[in-house]
Image 1 (cartoon, rainbow, N blue to C red):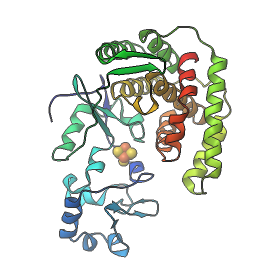
Image 2: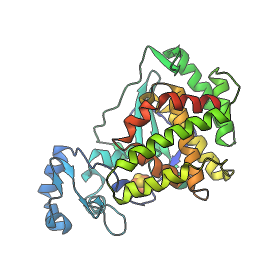
Image 3: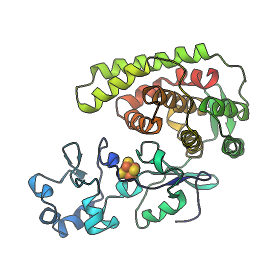
Image 4: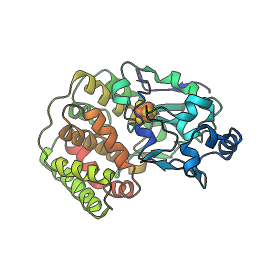
Length: 327
Ligand code: SF4
């Protein structure tokens, strides 16, 4: 793989928690991977794959809420027995997220990896994880809009954005501070008005949480939605969060820089809305789990990817912009 940019000091290693083998749709799997697993007689090697179909229409099936190939010790049977190359491309890519921008290829780690908050300082340099993608055909989205929306009513040219992005990344990397302070620094670098209105930001947060709670109240009962309903109920209590530990501060700083460099704001229509959502998620995770906000944040991130919730969060962009502008 050609030269790839990653957020400065980004590290990650798999902690083998198995979270990515649950909560996700496990496909589509490449036809050649399915053919190779049939050729290896996977059903004879792994009894659960003989008890029920291990793939249906190109998607791996679940067993007890997890991928059929997840072993009791949270390791992947395919990886352990047949090697990394036997796994579907989406498994090998997780949690890396790639995007091509005018300066080349960017790789970041996804916040929904449950082990990222623990490995972000002690894991391998993120760039080294890219070797796991050797031989995987990855479709890489391209970031090349004519203009980049900072807010819905303010845009800059793509070349101006690339210069702003570089400044934002450098400014944020130099700061060891709480998320609200990082957000204020980002606003300044982006040339956004400096005044705050925490009450207005809190109203916007309440509106987003009320909308999420309404959607969740109609979702069918299962362990996942039960957990997320409890999350939303607890999050409705909008007190000021406790200060973060040094490790969690650096984790949030890395997530923020990864969000910007990986252009994760694109689905929300503007940089402000994307950053507003990230800050809202962090605030909620800290309120729900003050001792381990990183783990709560990864659970929330998996929750936000849910097919019903993702469009709702996209529609909540005006409130997310308010959170960005006023918190
Ligand atoms: S969620 Fe992350 S740390 Fe956990 S098994 Fe998956 S890749 Fe590894």
